[in-house]
Image 1 (tube, one colour):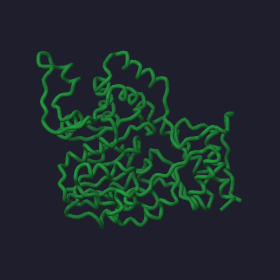
Image 2 (cartoon, rainbow, N blue to C red):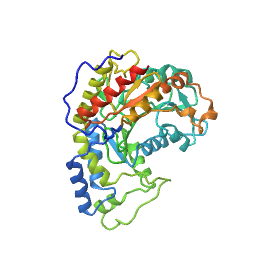
Image 3 (cartoon, rainbow, N blue to C red):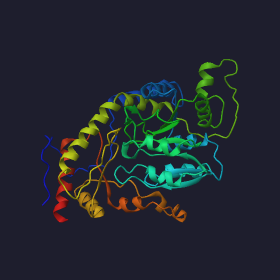
Image 4 (tube, helix red, strand yellow):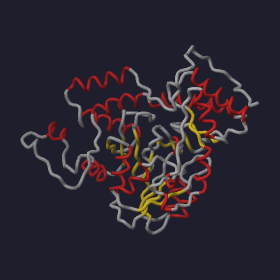
Length: 390
């Protein structure tokens, strides 16, 4: 028999047949009203609200420039394009990540080098980076897995004096910190995702954060088809030649619009509150599972403060546990199947032995700010009940 949780939370009455999802956005009337205001304004596209969101993000994360985009994938793509990669150039990425982290390297025509992951945090393995970095390496994209910051000092040490740019994939890490500094301003380029279920959501969206003005200017052009001035800039600031613009290079339709930005502005106000709620959930999960020998809970290292986007456990018989939870109307997740094992990348024959073993045991439990005590207790009880069959 597995031990039960030592402490029960006070629960509100709820229909136990309702589905508990792995993620759920936290939306209030403030976000709804902000969207309504944009709709009433008559300006829905890239405009003043997007600019306000960019400025507020820059102030919050203490960076000089934020360029808001329509996805985290777009952010990674444009950030890499700044480096003018050539076909023989290599970019090191962790194999445990969402597929965008690798795809953007292919978008840019460079070569992907898959790195293994740390067996505890599932962040990129610094020692494997040291083994795989070489004269062709132009960038490393560390992923702050689940919201837990990577070993940034270790990565910088691995880079040494090489001309290698670190581009942080902070899709999970909005509100995370490394050595008391926000994730967002530690590296030359940091990319956030504001996808529907991220810690800060815009419905869909992303951003690149940088302190380099030249890069910010280029990012703004590339996000708007390579055009020198976007529609808002021409309409708001130009008089006679408001109609005129120049196309300086190939660009993309990657810009954010004011509807998404309006949601983001309200979400930013609640980011710390929502991340505190996530941390409270983590504390209760950890307390419930701490004495259970067959469950390995996620770490939080001394130098890191996780944003807790994902709460992952490592367990034996993971797939049986998934089926067990689904029978109880609980929807867990698996983050992620190693990228180098997908059919598209399998012919690269990458060597990532830790990831190849550990993904079979990784399971993401439900984690979202508005998770009720009743839902949390249901998940905990269901997981512990599975131990009786091991």
